[in-house]
Image (cartoon, rainbow, N blue to C red; front, top):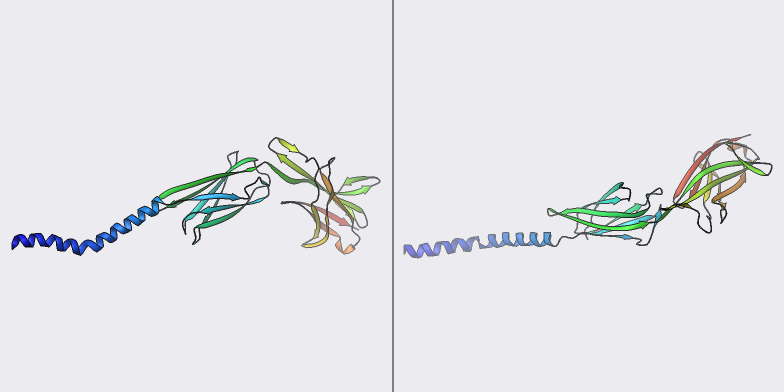
Length: 243
């Protein structure tokens, strides 16, 4: 009888503990599968070449609720860091504006995350072969047949707002074969726009664009701000409108 009890008792204990042991094994197996199957991917749109000032989107895929750090590394070693968290479907989209005065060439983007203690990284690259930005903004007044830079414009006087547009590539600064076209200029009194125009000029022989006007309203006398915009870049200048 004693031998029978010794035989039956371990079996009974095992039967009682079986659900618990199976549950633990199931959770451990699930955790192992989750960790082993953890993934992190990143891609960029647009996938074509972009210029300084353009906006790209980093598309990241992983599991839901994962904190992701994105490092943007330029060829000169400078870095920018961004972060976010994936949504319930495991996706994350981060918009990034490429700096206008970026170090041109290949830009490397690395996404990093920790999932169930497992460190993951995904990497991709994109190319920025050129950038365009504004320089040499000036206000000029007509003197005879020439235009002269000035910081003071008088009521009724012809004035020209001018800017140079620079095309920069890895090999240096160039001008496109067809030159530059466009750009806009606004003149503000405080926060009120009192003049706006599309800039003209440019072309194969020059990188300058301009807009001409005359101010005749004495109510506008005072300090005015010129704001020139071309693509993603902005440049400012102040001048005084006098009687």
